[in-house]
Amino acid sequence: GQQVMQIPQYQHVQEGEDFTTYCNSSTTLSNIQWYKQRPGGHPVFLIQLVKSGEVKKQKRLTFQFGEAKKNSSLHITATQTTDVGTYFCAGRTGLIFGTGTRLQVFP
Amino acid sequence: KAGVTQTPRYLIKTRGQQVTLSCSPISGHRSVSWYQQTPGQGLQFLFEYFSETQRNKGNFPGRFSGRQFSNSRSEMNVSTLELGDSALYLCASSAKGLVITGELFFGEGSRLTVL
Image (cartoon, rainbow over all chains, first blue to last red; front, side):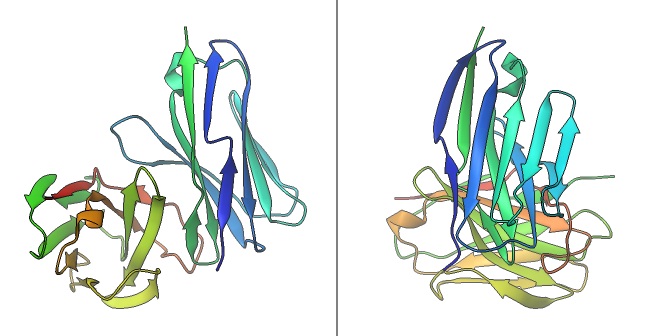
């Protein structure tokens, strides 16, 4: 069946460092969404990408959708302690969530 | 606008029992989807209801079932509970449903512990 893998599983960074998580699907996705879940919280929608090769930015966050629509990435520039949490990608055709990347930021 | 409301927030059951969880979506949202979140398996899709009809189903055994009412509120039921059913159960509502592109709004979840 369809699988969506994320790497890395965990990432510890020093505040101010950059962070990237990658999402890879075994099948072509109609679109991809990204969610952030703070510790003890619930997933919160960040963004949706639909077009092949699409790039979107939200302040320090940059999202990319691969040309083949099978992979995506989230890059955070100059991390802050408020970025702590687990980041999930979610691929549509059905809705399959990636395995998540837990980000820890040390001040 | 009120968010997605899930009840109960926490519950403890024993093996073999059954449990019913409730989810009230955002007003006007007709799609409710359910997810199981565990440390080992991450977020896994259970099923989605739209206008009282189940439109998508994940890869879970028949012990997991759900329904949606005419006011879009949804319930999920797990029968014959097993230890492995201990998890955070999240529901999400969407204005457009999973078949069509749409942002998901998650509730706080119901944390089920099976002893």
